[in-house]
Image 1 (tube, helix red, strand yellow):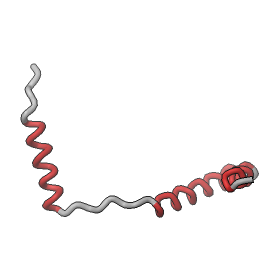
Image 2 (tube, one colour; image 1 turned 180 degrees about the vertical axis):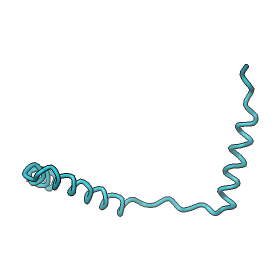
Image 3 (tube, helix red, strand yellow; image 1 turned 90 degrees about the vertical axis):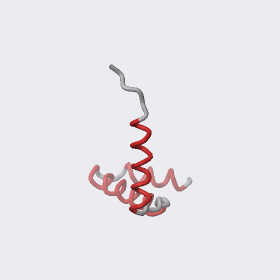
Image 4 (tube, rainbow, N blue to C red; image 1 turned 45 degrees about the vertical axis):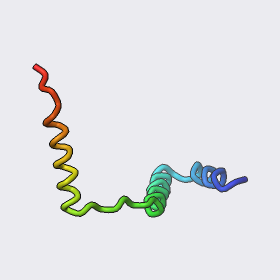
Length: 63
């Protein structure tokens, strides 16, 4: 029996509230091991907004 099968077997034996608790814990572990995207500086965020604004203002107006 592999780890996935063992976890599923134990999961199925738990009441629904404990299953939810186990799911929450698994999501916590997943997020803990997921690389986080670096935060942008304020200057970088403003540059992103400015380029997005220029793109939107160059689109033809439908009407």
